[in-house]
Length: 346
Image 1 (tube, rainbow, N blue to C red):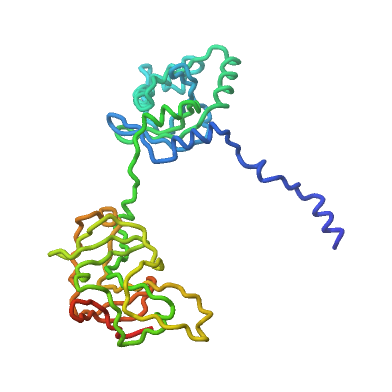
Image 2: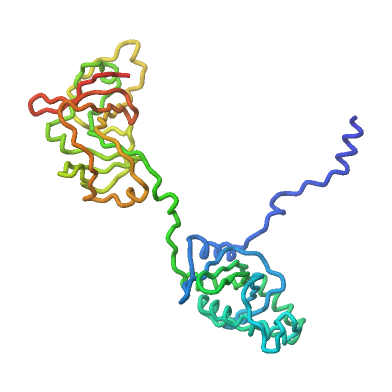
């Protein structure tokens, strides 16, 4: 058994570092990719737009000259091309005649690409094959292969090689494309309207029982509330049509301690609770809930109105402690003071 294992290991392929199997990018190559694909871009045309994506080297690409730089281009199969006057196709020719025939057949497509790239694309018909091969090898070392598509007008797609040095000029000519988030724009997100309550210490929290009253503040506080959702809050004010957003949104953490006056007297910790950490408990009273879409969330700004009924004395509320449901209560008023009587407690 041991001999068989040694035999199989002897014929097993040697392990090589993964680093040697992954393609390597130079800093210039990585920077070019960042400029062109760090954000959605497109290159406008009179009848559409050019879109670029990372590509791979295309076989049988035609060499082009553009402002003295050597590019390469290969149109995808099915790209419309014209027949020549003699009834032949460009692929029926060889040598220099083949390049010229290709240029005539794809002239409309070359004009559109030249417009998008901001440089005239002129086919190169190299006479010296050895010199052409050397020029291609040099261009390939400092180049980026792209896959392109042109929308609008005749279908146009293929592979394009551009010098790495072209990345900044291409990025400058491009226009940003708005994120295509239409499928997500109607996604509903839960939100709640809450009256801020007191911040209690651990001993006050443990002492609460059904029937206790937590003080919110002056009765006028019934006209102010907060919209809370996904770690943000917006101040609200009562409006004839509902709740009106009364300020910009700001980050909010349910467990953060906000100094609010409370009429619940602190009690001395007992022996069995002395070791429990005195973690502050932030109370809020939920008076309404709703769902907002991503579009509506993006439109939230001062003046936005939610058509929700106003809470009144005797209205039931949901009591939350550090954002979690902890019980239920009802709004009560004693003179000018507004509070919540606990009805149930978990």
